[in-house]
Length: 188
Length: 188
DNA sequence: GGTCGCCTTGTACGTACGTCTTGCGCATTT
DNA sequence: AAATGCGCAAGACGTACGTACAAGGCGACC
Image: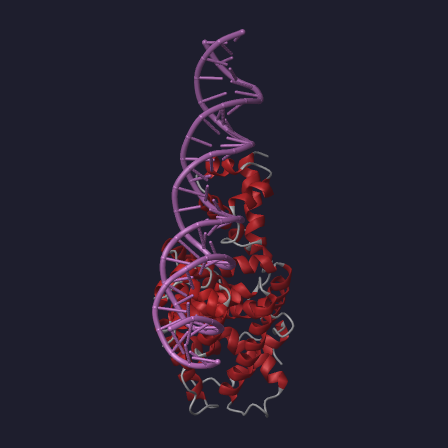
């Protein structure tokens, strides 16, 4: 494994352990077992290395949620939430890295555009797994409402699990909450 | 206005404009129009100043959501979401500061305990404004389910508005999404 | 008028950071 | 066998940071 790959691997590890802003070139170099200069040589700058590693790390993270074998029915919906809630503790650092990226995107327009695109994917993905419909037959209206709400629930519940897993809702409590909430919705 | 107050005011401003991690003692001093040493004299350290300012800033932020005059009926629920969505753009920096604090709490156990407490308040507050019941008559079960879900929706939708206000859902789309979602809930 | 606190300042100090320069080993080429 | 070029390391360089220090201003009180 060349130093370039060693650096990328170390960067992902640092991204999860220390976060984007707190990892220094010295952290990266010592974690990879290479010299600081190797970063400049292979990536030009520390930022470029971290960005590439971040892209890989966040991209590969979809797998953490687990596959949605069957979808569209009520059982699948509950199963999705059980997988999600489990992932919040199992892959805690991954979700933290996600949150950190959202925040950092507020000061970086380019990154923000990327996150906006990812958010669009997330919305339609959520709408798909809930309704069970294929990508093509999804109405834009459905994505904008049901997809947005479902995606918001995911990130919102994730934040609660990050700050306090004890008091954060279980999958069943989320379903119960949604049922209770529907009683307070204005008609039509 | 003494230098202490000037520093606190400047710190809040910096907190909103640059964020906790990125504000330096030189930023604070020049924003307040005082010397760097004044920070050490009045607060002991930069961190202590920022923490006190953060506490004040986040505490006063409840006002941004607006008062919930009447509550418990469907119209109030829709009105709440309209106020929230409006606040996401109007008080953008406030919500960013909130998000940053949640994230920073992941590396600071003491802050995390504070945030967990605030989250509990948020949950019961949300349950209260939705159901229209008083604090005392709220069942713990209701807070844990309905309160959690509602709070998660708030932070989740907020995040979508931060990354892309264009594609983020309006209050009406949120309501439509919730209605649509209830059709996919597992029974009982 | 001198003195004693409380504020306030200018600035020096030590540390940590990211990048860049220099040079060394070691293949491969001529 | 000399030369070329790539991969890489060691360390210096300039900068920015948070804090500590010594000194000055300025009221109030003896």
